[in-house]
Amino acid sequence: MRSNALADFLLPEGFAAPAVGAVLRESSAVVEFGRFALRAAGDRRSRRETSYAERAGSRLGDPVLLVPGFLAGDGTLALMSRALRAQGFRTYRSHIHANIGCTLNAAAQLEGRLESIAIRRGSRVQVVGHSLGGMLARGVAVRRPDLVSNVITLGSPMLAPGAHHRSLSASVEMLVRLSKAGVPGLMAEDCVAGSCARQSFEECRAPMPAGIGFTAVYSRRDGIVDWRACVDPVARQVEVTASHLGMAFDPRVIDVVADSLLRTSSASAVEVDRGKSA
Image (cartoon, rainbow, N blue to C red; front, side):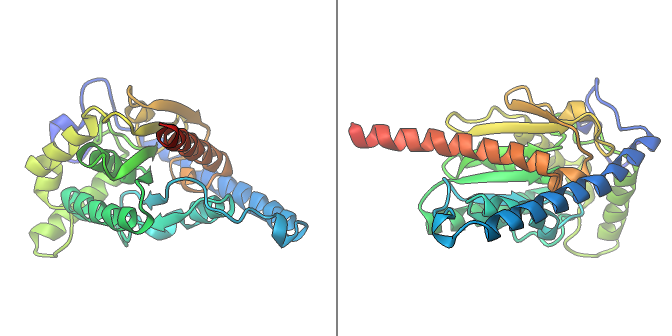
């Protein structure tokens, strides 16, 4: 069952909300967190056994902005940020404390953050977005290809934003009711059924501009969204075995993210070298 407030176009034919019991698959997040803890402990031992002079001192490629999902804040991607930094990537927070407001406002905030980082670092930015965060990242990349060099989405239902578990539908309905009651800064009815929702959805489906890497990570074990909605046909598609929540910290998913970041970094380095030789 989906929210009555949700526009029909957000759940196109061919997609469906996960069954009520599908959320039980999210319990594997405990195992995935344990997997992260074991990997982190091993990395700490390795660093202790490696001299400071032998550790990687330079940062890899373009800066990386991490964007949290619906109802979440930057803290949910803190473990991924830590792991990527340990590998040499320069990561940044989105400054989204709770992703519960208007999607267009969130996209505008994200765009401003990207501009700030791009000016500071003198380069375009790679963006990693979890769930709704990936949808926001893809939309901003369509509008501002001058700011984005790569987009990696993790369990982001870009093809059918309404194909989510009924627990999320209930959360959406509550936010809309509170917004109608006058609580500011929350997702309003227009954000899920009006022109705001339509614009956000169309940007998620728009062609990705040339010169931007795009990887869509999905899992058939996802208990929150229909995994089929996360398989963007224009992206490099990578399947993982993880829960929706676990994608934020499962080390196997982080390895996929790091690989995609390196692919874009390598491609950028080749372009720079070609420019110098020319």
